[in-house]
Amino acid sequence: MKSMNLEQVSAIMDKFEKQFEDMDVQTATMETSMGQTISTLTPQDQVESFMQQIADENGLELQLSLPQTTAELKEKKEQDVLSERLAKLRNT
Image (cartoon, rainbow, N blue to C red; front, side):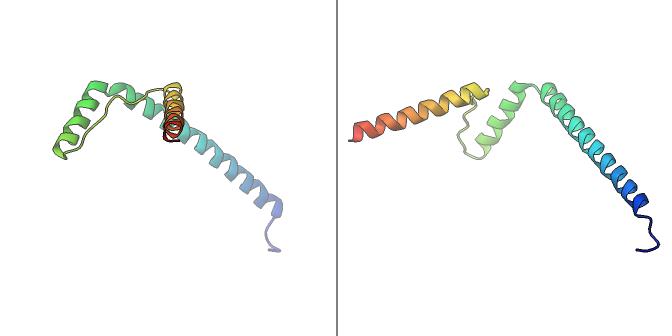
């Protein structure tokens, strides 16, 4: 420890942390870009057809009409909650 220059070690560690953070940002940006590119290149009808084929081969029932947006998911959840409340009222 006596032979090490603590200021120099600290500077090297700071540089390493900055490079590591930069790499994280670059990786996240690349992953986002690749994900968007791949999802826009794959035709939705081919994906649904393939999913149906796999479901048929395995004897599964596939429901392809899933809500697409957060608003639709929220609305569906609210409807489920209201349906549960109505069922409870009918049972009492």
